Image 1 (cartoon, rainbow, N blue to C red):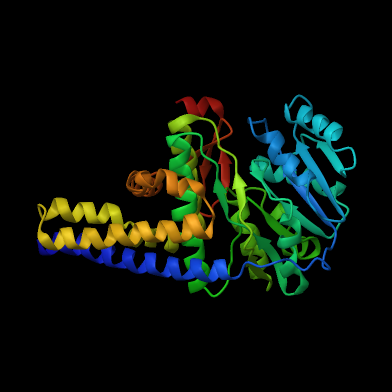
Image 2: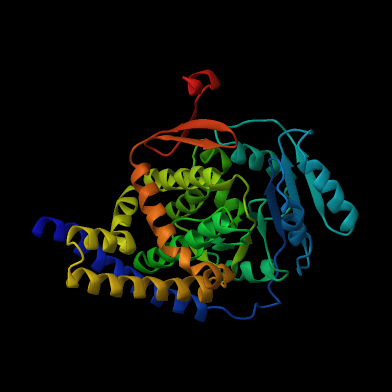
Length: 386
């Protein structure tokens, strides 16, 4: 009983503390939201790397053609002329004739990460000193650029990034939406608070100073990393620049692939975090309140203390999900699919454990080995089958 108690009581208590920190951080994050200064609008180049299309690709890209912003350009990059994304760009050109929209087609490769190679191929076409790198499955409100650029008034800021929420089409996408809004975003807010700033960024949106980014290593410095977005923030922070979190939340389109696809994406994410922030990854065990409370109920055969701890954990977890996900991220999935939070937490704990057990990931149909430094090493197709 003593040994088993040590295995579940401490993680339950630390999880409650984590939930409290996340709620406090979410309250401060929400309080930082306000109107943008419309007199500050430096020109921006938006990078949109595309590889194939999803049902929402057009709307996601179109949202960046509808920005209420004086001067900006949008560059869409693909590796091959046969990519269906080319047809989407042609449609956008017809629907938004006044948009400064460019298409770059290049198969040039600078490293193992295909997305970074795509971005590097787009860079020569960029005309403006501020670059916004944003995944193709991100949809933004019309005032997004106006709000995102605000921290750039301070020359010490090297990057501004955004958290996201995901639209849901069913229970599988709801699991992923809950992980993003009530788990991942909570961890971001807590890390930002404890570290007194940010040293990482997210692929949903990263606004960077071109000169600072290139001086810190540029795309060539990211070419082989799995978590390229994380390393953008790390590079700029290491160079002495601040990384700011914008209060504007963008929307992530649902991703196809079903439950198996979800498992592969999340396992890739967990292994990316493990090699990027190893101590932070190990510390995630102290945030798994629901799984640990269930372990306590099983270990003690339903002792009153275990039920009392479980009641506090589940209440704190639910309250935190509402504060961070529903209020902080504005995610309607939290109100609709809240009953899936225990399943999401159990799934997350299981994938966290699996993240320790291997070093391979699958991305866009190709398998890679992840080095201890977080770099991708392609696995030949023949070797992958063995």
